[in-house]
Image 1 (tube, helix red, strand yellow):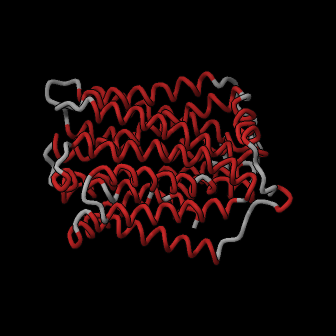
Image 2 (cartoon, rainbow, N blue to C red):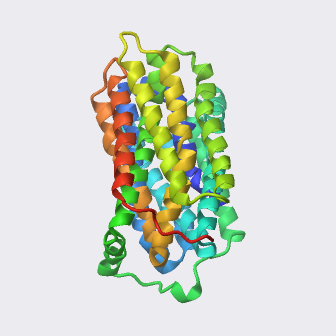
Image 3 (cartoon, rainbow, N blue to C red):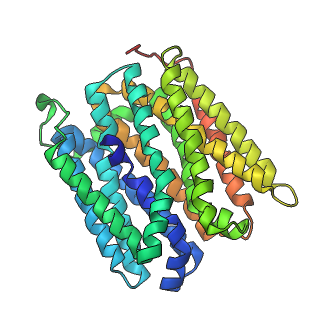
Length: 388
């Protein structure tokens, strides 16, 4: 259920990608404007994380999750009824805020119940299950688009949010210890939790490392339909297959990670994932700087880039949460906030400075993985880890 909760955003993004060209025609706007519905999602999701994390440390995980799912579901149905682009942009942002508000509690739930390496294993397993969403979301999106047009995608998202709300309301218990639920939070205490986190230099460097690595994937999501459908002229029917290749490698490396955690430190596996992603970034960059960009070079590099996150995200998250046990909700929120803020900034630049080639895209994702590796190197000596 936690994996499904985290999957709210992948479904909201990936089931929607194939509908973007149709929506551009429906609303009579350019591709760049429709791509802003993705980048606005990133920004609002980060704000939802920012607000929801500290609130979950004070009011409990469950109330925050239920509130977020309500906002997500209601926004989805309103978008489906829109006839101009302005309400779509506004409620798309509100939908993302609800998703950020809800999903921020997932890893906090895990830290409430586990510690040490077990956190990395569970986070990786949830990420692995969650990555099934990008595999099936384009297929589900194509199905609803075929029968109900672009609005069908948002009917589906409304139903998904509603079903999860009922499951969490009746079946999922509160994980935060009652003694920790104060049901009070002042303006100063709200920011104090973030101040505690940012006072730890190593946590901040790890945060920037995994956030840049993740941001590269979200930049790809922003430009995915342009790269494959418009630039390389791939038949839209093959889009789910191309997209699914990313997910299959990600799930495979996530599964491998849960096995390797029995024998190797979390930090070592994180380093391996970051280096693998850097190799992927170089591969994409070299592929597009030829006179005629290579489809297979770009495709293979993107698959490796996204797949390597199976070794990065779970391990990086575990290191950060284990270093900040008393503010796990806020610590997890910072992970969502920064990676989605970076995604918003970088994705917006690509959308607003839209070109007829993919050189800017390749340059951005290479820069993301390069910075991810640099920040990890700056984090210094091996991180102290519990065996768990």
